[in-house]
Length: 253
Image: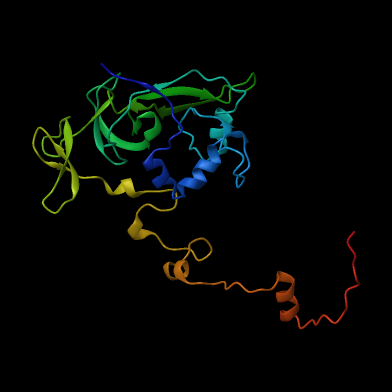
C-alpha cells in the first residue's frame, strides 16, 4: 500500500545543485511571505503568515513562471506525491519505460524534476501540442516529452544484460557509495552528465569568470578593516578635503 503526501515546500537537492545557486537564494525567490513579526524584538514571538504548499512543475523555483503558477489568486488542483527515500535517477541514466505507448523501449534521461518524482526520457513518452493558433494562423505543432514517475514509470537498465533491473545502494571496499544491479551485481555508474548545471557541463571543463566568480584565495582574504570613522570622512581624506568649520551650538529642551 503506497502512502502519498501533498506537495511540500522543500526543493530537491538535485535542483539546488543544477541551479548552481545558494539554497537560501532559491528559498527567497519562491517563498511567499504575506506577514511576519519583526526580527530582533524579544517581546514579539517568531511568527509569520506564508504560503506553505507549492505546486512544482518543469519551471524552476527561482523563475518568474514558477511564481505565476503559484500565485495566491490562481487555483490549482492538489497533487499528491509518493515519498522517495533516496533519489537514485540522474541525468544521463539509461532507463526502460514501463508504462504507456512506449513500454519496453529504452532511452536516456534528459531532465530530472525531483520535487515531482519526474524524469524525462529523450524521444519517448511524447505528446503533440499546437501553439500559436488563431483565426489567421493554424499554429505550430510541437512534439515534446511528457514526464514519467520514477516510482512506476521507469527502471534502470543493467549495463551487462541491457535489460530493466532492480537495484540497491551499496558501498565498495574504498567506501564509495554506488548503485548495484540486483540481476547481475554490476555497478551502475552515475553518468558524468549528472554534474551538469546552468553554468557548466562538467566541473573539470568549467572556466572561472572574473566578473562572476570569487577566487578561492579572495574568499579568505580580509579586504575591509573597520575604523572609527564615517564613510564621509574616508571620502574627504581621499580627496584632500579638510573640515575647518565650527558647528553652531544646538540646544535641547
